[in-house]
Image (cartoon, rainbow, N blue to C red; front, side, top):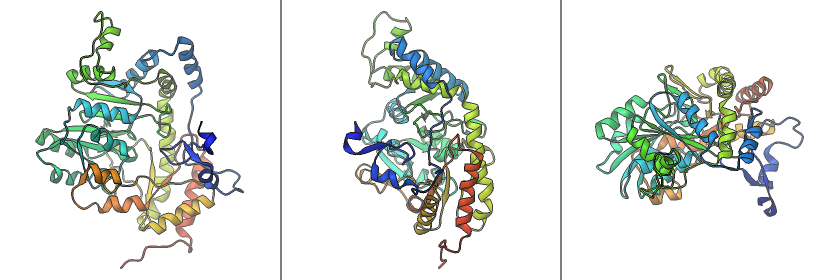
Length: 422
């Protein structure tokens, strides 16, 4: 229907948008560029349509075979700390369920980074909770764990850490702080599915893990997500009630009761079975998809180490005892002008590269609903100096090398501006 208003579908544009005006999509790459490299291109395994057709032929049931198969497979992949995995319509829905399960009340506070997507804060604001923003670290753009304790008040009820780019937060320290102050830990692992921290899967270390399978993620189903409830059987049981609109319908479907009732808060968190059918086709090939993405990421990491060592840019720092899922490869430049130059030059070569979030603490809703503690200088700088490179599964070795060569060429060009040290 958007086409009636002059929009066209464009899957390679800004991460959180599918439909954009034609005037924004047409200048993505020069007209004479024969083989442009988009920022994001969806990878399909070949069985998505087969499984989706099975769902249609079965009558479009909800919470059916594919939904349950995906939950079981994800729980198998992430390991024994997960008491239960629940499939949900989106990563946003997973965060909203976690907020409900924490029984947060109006006026409570939750500590989170400012450099994240709005969903991370919205799930709490919807409950009347105040998001308290703290700064991130240059190395990985994750919440600075050394700043958390100073932000804790008698109203603080939880810490929500975001595993940016699939790089793990410093979870031992975060969990120790939470234990001392009797706080929940919610892992926003929307970008962190199958990344590990000291051998443990992200999303299973805190009390809750929230995953996304949005079409821009590593494993995709268009829109979809999952919630992992960890080490708490009672909470896992209540989650099924919230999932089914506040009723005990799940027990009814399992044959445990002869009729179901409204017994608690809840909402429509059951995902579309079609989405789970698509996701199942992806999960069947999860190891191959993950390996191919990590291989692309490694080319950039290895090929830009010497450039980063000269101070021309920063690249991700992944602790030796952690493994990233290679969701995002980012570069940080000394100034906005330098970042914009790289973006322009990459675009001229037919390569799409993008910035990312606008800081939440200075956004209109962040000012209205939240507050921040301490100096936010890293977040303030990063939102203007970050650039992400294409790293999608399906890029050929030649395409990955072309991106790397282009970045190196720009870095060594005499026309590229450099930072002036005062």
